[in-house]
Structures are given as C-alpha cells and as structure tokens.
Amino acid sequence: MNFLARFKNEQPASGTFRYGLKYAVAGLAGLALASLWPHLAQATDIQEITTEAGITAWLVEDHTVPLIAVEFAFEGGSSQDPAGKEGLVNLLSATLDEGAGDLKARAFQERMEDLVMRLSFDEGRDDFYGSMRTISLNADDAFEMLRLAVTEPRFDEEAVERMKTQLVANLRREKNDPDAIAGRVWSETVFPDHPYGRPSKGTEETVAKLTPDDLRALQKRLFARDNLKVAVVGAIDAETLKPLLDRVFASLPEKADLLEIPDIEPKTGMTETVELNVPQTSIRVGLPGLKRSDPEFIPAFIMNHILGGGAFSSWLYEEVREKRGLAYSVGSYLVSRDHSGMLMAATGTRAEKAAETLSIIEEQFSRMAEEGPTPEELRKAKDYLTGSYALRFDSSSKIANQLVGIQIEDLGIDYIKNRNEMIEEITLDQVKAVARRLLAGKTPTIITVGPNGA
Image 1 (cartoon, rainbow, N blue to C red):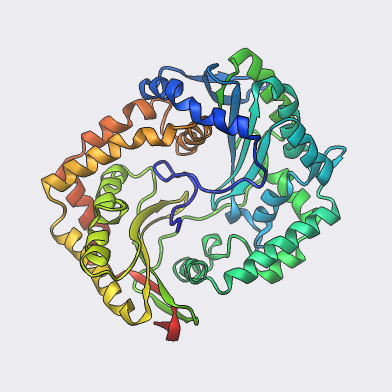
Image 2: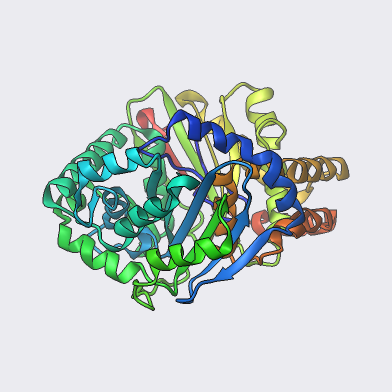
C-alpha cells in the first residue's frame, strides 16, 4: 500500500507510466547513480538555467549514458477541479498523450515508440506533473512530441470517451476497495466544503459528464509559464537544452488562471464507519500536521519516522505487528499540502481486532506526546534518514523528480547539499516539542471500513 502522495519534499514519488521504454533504455537509467549521485551529494552540478523566453529550469548534466530525463510541474492539481466537474484534472492527465497536433492517438503512441521515448502525466492535489524520458540521439524529436502534448492536445471525442470509460471502470472497482473508500471518506470528513474534500478522481457521475471543451478550458488556464517548474537530468548541455525548453513552453500563457484555494485545518475528533463485506477492516487515524514551510517540519519528520515512518523499526510496527501480529503493515506519515497539513496513521486488520488495533495506535500517539523518543532512537532515526537519502537519487528519473519537488517547496538549490546536516542538527528537545505540539491533548479523526462497519 502506498500511503504517500507524490513528492512533497521527503515523500517518494508515486505513479506509473502507461508506455514503457525499450529494454536498452531502461537499463541505462539504472546506470546513472554511479556518476550522478556524487555530484548531487555535493550539490555542485545543479545548474539553474534561464532560456531566452525566460523559462527557468534546473539541469544536472551527465554524459555517461545517452539518456535524458525531464520532469516538470504546473501549480494547480485536482483542487482546481470546478465544483460538479470533479475528476477533470485527472482526465486531463490521461488524455494529453492521446493525440496531439496532426497525430491522432494511435499515431501519437506509435511515434513515441519509434523514438524510444516515454511520456506521462499525473495529478496531485496541488500540482500537475509531467515526465519525459528519451535517448539523447532523439532529443530534438522527443521534445517536439512533448511540445505537442502540452500545447496542442487534440482531445478527440473518441479518445476522451475511451479514457473516461477506463476511469469510470477504475472508480467502480474502487467501490469495493476498503483503502480507496477510507481515503475518500477521510477527505470528505476532515475537509468538508473544501476542494481537498472532493474526490480527486471524481465520481462516475461527474466523470461521465466531462467534455473535450472542459479539457480545453482547463488546459488553457492551468498550463502557464508563471506556475511552471522544470528539471532535466542527463546527456544534454545547457546551450542545447535552452531552445528545446523554449520550443515546449514559451508559447504558453504568461500567467495561469487558478482558482483561489483557502487554507484549512483538518477536523479532529470525528469518527466515521463504513460497512463493507471484505476480509479486513481498513483504518485511518489522523490529526492536523504541518505544511512543508513550517520551521518545525524537519523535527516532525524525524519524530514521525520513529512513531510509524520507519518500515521495520517504528513504534507502531513494533507494537501492532511484531508484538501482537494484528496487521501485516502499519505506518504513519506526514502529508504536507499547499493549504493544509496532516499527520496520519493507517493499517488493515481483522474486523474483530479493529478496536484493539485502534487503541494501540492511539496509545502510541499519546506515548510520543508524553515521553518522546529516547536518545538512542533519535540517533538511529538520524542514521537511517541520512544514510538512505542517496536511494532517492538512484536513477536520472528520480533525480529529476526530486529537483522538481525541491523547487515546488521552495527549499533552495542547495537543499540536497544541506539536507542531511539539517537533520543532524535537530535535538531531542526539538523532536519532543513538536511531538507535544502535534499529539498532546488531541483527539484524532478515525475512519474505518470493513465488516459491520467495524
């Protein structure tokens, strides 16, 4: 189960691509770590470039393998869905590569296959993401395909209807998925009357009503130069890259036309149960958390690792799985959005053990608030978090993704260089203080989905 959203500083990227690279190119991606990570660790090879049209991008240049990875994001994700048209941004992500320019859907896909390139789009609550992978030999043609998808999508009726059918089928399957239900009910419960509370992928009814004209209008107001972040990693130099980026993005509007989204704090003390005839009960427990810009985010990040973020070393894992065998997986995580923050815990267990499992999770929340971690636990958490950071850069794709995320969060071009030092500087008192701030005296909201609503 992937509990985490797409990249929000320390949260790994998620999402899959519908079209794969040739095996040779996939192999090249795995080779990138040896040459790129040492440069990234010293933060000496991240170039900030500005094109003639004023497009700013971060570039990590490396010619060890003939591969180029491009990641970009536009501010404004599914929270930009107009009321009654939930799922529109998700549909946009599914249809941008279903034909563009003079190429209809099949011809567009065949052309990408011929170019040995990969193109995908994804939506988050606050941002819309794009990715491209290509071999350097085909860079010129690959960037042209990206330009077509971003600036000249066709949104043909047949293609849009086909993708809507797939999305509606996915929504129907999720009606019997306890985790999907728990996530939807959680959002509705803690964010009422707010864009975060609406289903990000829409409903069968809202998706069915979406039209190509809806997509065209959204693309025009969402894709602009002022809300764009770009990162490029691989076998290309700055002077070659600049005109390619201008070709893709320079014709976009100067400013995006985004809906204003208000800040909101998740509601606490709410309890919702959903009855579903499945073998296990899915559980969500949560409290308000922190935005990434909060000065105490890094202490909270360390605290959460000890509480439930460490896969095999956390308090929740030890108490719920190791000691009692109540669940196969259990964890906690921070969700930092542009307009809210959450501290969540999630697991799945047998219906008759749901109450016991919930009680243990709440006990660990209270224990963290009252006692906090030990010096040894803090040392182990720091060792893991600093030592494992390189794993986020074991391919050119991951590096590019991380660089875009750092730009989105406005952490600065030196963040990779400074990040581990920032973690090492956090004291035990700071971790205990943020634990009290987030957990002491708080009544979490609890969502359960399972047999008899247990």
